[in-house]
Image (cartoon, rainbow, N blue to C red; front, side, top):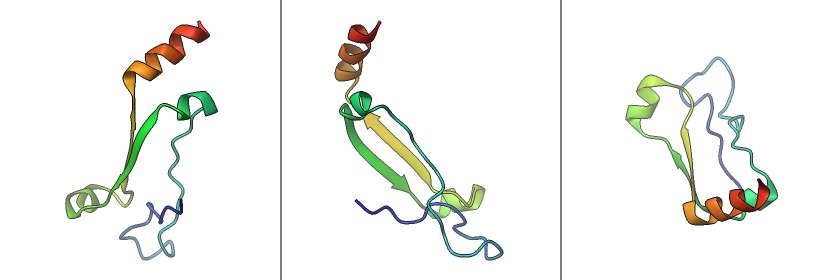
Length: 70
């Protein structure tokens, strides 16, 4: 999946939007990922030049994963 730039959304002094925001995970935890969303609205741009990134996980699967790694 190619994700568009999420930083420098309205700044013109830093060049075009870039993908510099990260959400890191282990491979095992990544397997519990349900969805990933980028929020780039006028309200977001009012407060920051970075889009919001939201990762949603299956909490039951995360709990099972964490229970086996303790």
